[in-house]
Image (cartoon, rainbow, N blue to C red; front, side):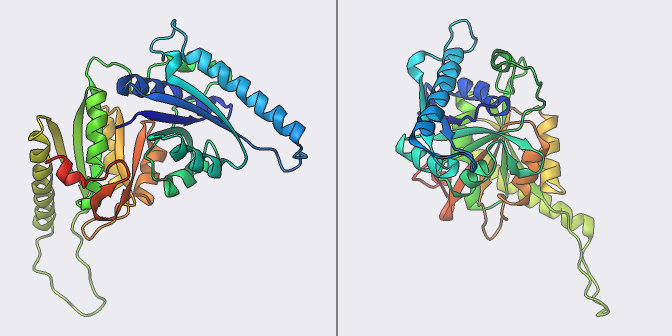
Length: 332
């Protein structure tokens, strides 16, 4: 499914933090890795052909150095030289990445985020936000736990990540909200779990039942609040049972859990509890039974976790941009 990955770089240590994850995935998928840098001239600098060539040349040298690092046989893991391509573009970052990615037949973009305010402040400014909102490609966002001023690229590439081998195995956590649109993430999530040799976990968070009072109308409720909340939990489990059964028909096992509470709180807490390797969340997953994950939930989860968060852009009727088929049919 993922034959070509892209990592946009801007020359910063933060942007380079996406490289270890990209190397692991490229090896697992047997994919090519495209390192891209968009050179932009500051507004106060004269945009002359000479200066443009100078900036492009500097970017080419930088990418060549990164390519040399990640293909060094002494690096474990590393990529073969034939797997890595470099590309320098000149212009506005969002437009160049959005146009070049499909032209280069990129299947997945990996990039880092500051995570200070979720998706609003990212390593490439508004670039990641625009890519997530408007690109048809899935994007994996990584918020590094910490940055050391003097950290070298070699240390970045050799520091263990959540994708690194673990004695307890890897775990991919998939968030579902009960809508057919959100189920579309199952296809890329299953592929990720298979290639990473990871266990698959499904989580659905439901809100506790809270009676609504209408002023002084004196409406009396016959509801047992605790029982109604338990009914919601049971309905959610029945939903996950069906998903689990369809996945099992393909010879795959998964763990399911239902939590009651705030979606972002519960997702982050459960990911920490199971020591997840990555999360998969649908973007624009809004349906009659669901809600918009791309808004507060995905943003809050990304801000509060250091795990890679894979955001899969969803089209109406339960189709994802990673497939031409409805997800439900592909796991049945």
